[in-house]
Image 1 (tube, rainbow, N blue to C red):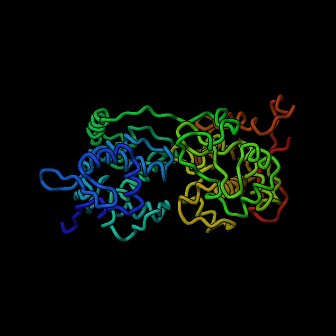
Image 2 (cartoon, rainbow, N blue to C red):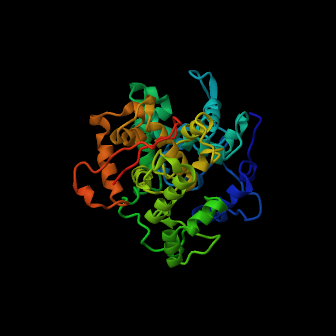
Image 3 (tube, rainbow, N blue to C red):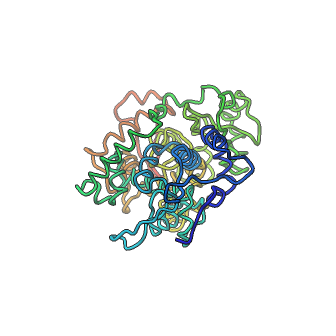
Length: 440
């Protein structure tokens, strides 16, 4: 093949190279072999002269990609093990796929058409790759899109999938995840994963009761890669937050200053919203964009508790505070006319106000799904599982979780009674202007 990488500088941009130098294990490894900061860094080569990433470099690339774009939603070891099997960590690996009638490329062996689909349909547009498959040989780009595909598989067909399904589907496609043809790949994966020189126990994040805003402010947590509210919200939305009495009180108590408001972080350094912040965002969005619909913000807050545990980037396969994915947001924007916020990529949906806005819009649509006024149980279960998947047996537990989650935001005597929820419809001539709300 004509393409050749001699140095890391040939296949990463300066920002990515700097991120690698900042990794303690990578910098130690590079300095040990005579690399010098500020000069080109050599790629390792196998006996055949092919460049490859060391296991330390592979781990660092995966960790950087996860930290930047997936916020610990994907298992680092899964990425490293799959990369080991697929390419031996060789960035220039290329293999012809007879079934797809095309070549798979790079460290995670992606088909160009899969990469284009992830970019075009799912909004993974951090790197400009569409129509230029040669860029898939670049480690950060390949791992970014490979990880995006893993995330999609985690919630394939609207259902949460386990590790075995994801790994076998990565190998043979979702329809072959339980087929004998992918079983050997799964066994090999387990063996490779077990042999990785690093192992970590996964931390699943705090339960909603633990992720409160009453802990230490993030500025007091040593070593946190600070994430600022101001980078995830417009100046107008930040002004609304500062003008909200409860938020002003909480932020002032924590010593926040305008222009540099820090998110709270959990033990894994994942940013999340306090309950005061979540409720404020919901109230602001509803008052500005859904004022005719008399929606109780506690509904949206409770859904945020269940969907994302209030994590800014979401949890698992769900994106953002309200778990709205890119295709759904684009459909709400383009087809239903919810255009107060313009969504251009999946990263936009990690912005709390944008996620809350499209979450409210989706709830509005569900409240009259198929032209019928829907019950509160249906709307909540449809939001969490999809309207076509609602059934008392399969999704009834979502309503129970919702009832529990909403107690964090509304505490009334009526909650002692079995029938304390009423779903009402706001009077409006517009088909999409009705939305369920809770009357206490």
